[in-house]
Image (cartoon, rainbow over the protein chains, first blue to last red):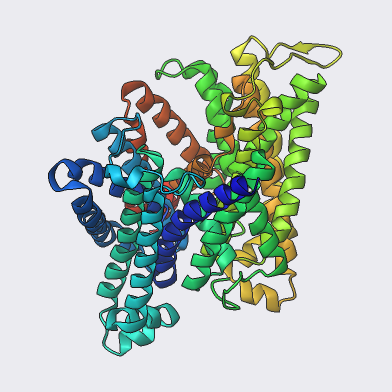
Amino acid sequence: MTQLILFNVFNGLIVGAFYALMALGLSLILNLSGVINFAHGGFLALGAYFAYALIPYVGFWGALVVSPILTGLVGLVVERVLIRPLYGGDPLYGLLLTFGLAYMIQDGIKYVWGSQSLPFKAPVWLMTSLSSDYFFLTGYRVFMIVIVTAAVAALFGVLGFTRLGMRIRAGTRDLETVSTLGVNTRLLRSLNFGLGVYIAGLAGVLAAGQLGLAPTMGDNLIMPSFVAIIVGGLGSLVGTLLGGLLIGVASGLTAVYWPPATEAVIYAMMGLVLLVRPRGLLGEEGRLH
Amino acid sequence: MNARRRALDVAVIAALVTMPFWMAEIGGYTELASRILVMGLAAMSLNFFLGYTGVLSFGHAAYFGLGGYGAAMAIKYLGLGTLPAIALGAVVATIAAAVIGALIVRRRGVYFAMVTIAFGQVFYFIAFRWSAVTGGDDGLSGWRRLPIDFGFATLKIEQNDKAFYYFVLAVFAVCVAAMARLIASPLGRSFVAIRENERRARFLGLDIERRIWLSFVISCFFVSIAGGLYALLNNFIDPRALRFDLSGNLVIMAVMGGMRSFWGPLFGAAIFVALQDFLSSRTENWMFLIGLVFVLVVRFFPRGLLGMLTRGAAA
């Protein structure tokens, strides 16, 4: 039983890491630009399929580096052409546009790569189990946790200690003042959007190795990412990270005790948070109400 | 302006009453006409909240689907007649909306949208997972809509497509008339006041949260009736009727037709449903094209069809 519980907690942590990666990207974009990027799940799938297409040429490790960058570039183009004109308008339009974009990306992937799921080859040595007692500790899962931790650390490093990160954080508080101080806020928002999409692409490559490739692979991750943001608290990236891990573990544990509620439990948690602490675990009072 | 509006009302009503007779001429069929009515009612109900109260809900499919499942289960398991089944579905959905509405009513803008989307998924997963009762992913079948017995006459909606269309139209008319009355009432005026300037409405002493909640619940009540009709139309319901895709589709119908006009969402629904029907019969990649429609509407026709026409008239 202990093993089963550990297995599910560990599973939950892995899934939670995906939720957190997705939610961090969404949060970045939401905080600075006020746009809910519904196409984020599509960008995740795009990152995964780019990696699939690149592996024959550059290998798994090359794909892990190149594919998120490509995805981020697509994000930059999308932001420049479609999203930028909507800044400052009714948030309804950003939501609708990215919603349509999500349809387009998903169907585009189906058109290019087919709608059936495809095998995804991670290096063999990563796929073996590390311990016979704890069979679920495969190399790939440990590797994923390492990569996710490194990515999150790098993201917080960039935000905390670089000029770009400082400007993003400042812009989240008061974009107008930042603009008055001579920062090119258009460029800032573009880079920030690209960064968010880059993270989605990275999550996509990792998810492909764990969950397999399917055009709809982002669908199951985007809703929990919203929940992660709400539970963690709007405006707080640390909160988003915590929220993602928390709901992942919660749904992992529920899978042990009451499997039918595996998905529903995270929404119940969201309801509870909204009832008891509406601003979320680490959210700031009065932000985006 | 009033004369123009009256003329539009008359034109819409005339078109709806005669639709089954000219639908075939333009390449459609009666069932498609019924579907336009059902989705039109859903989009107009959403717009009661979205367009007239000005709060961004992206989760109305949940209440649409609940209404549908409620009606279907009432017929399958309780053996209720058609009208009581729709009513039961509406009651269930309205209670759910009342509870969830109370949780989210203090949120605004994108945050409200995000919370409504996320909560909508609860019902999707319940329908998906609780397969013993809901049929799970395969949907709930094995039931049919029943003829309606008025005592003096029987409306055979179970086999006659045209009879069913007029049944849907009757329900549609009652709901739409009720919404029009509500919008014209002092309560409806206060919803519009909240949309136009929430802070000023608050200073005037309006209880904003309670009114937004009320508007949400009313809107969900009507959308759940549309959901019940949808289940009857197909003699079937599956979890996709609860999913967030449908919520997004309802919003684009309202926006495409024109959020600021009463009939706008009906036009949007007609275009959307006809387009979906046409595209999905021509190409496998119709979803790409539907997505493109979203993008084009947002970028080039954000005011919607009727919004553009009325602006053209004002200029």
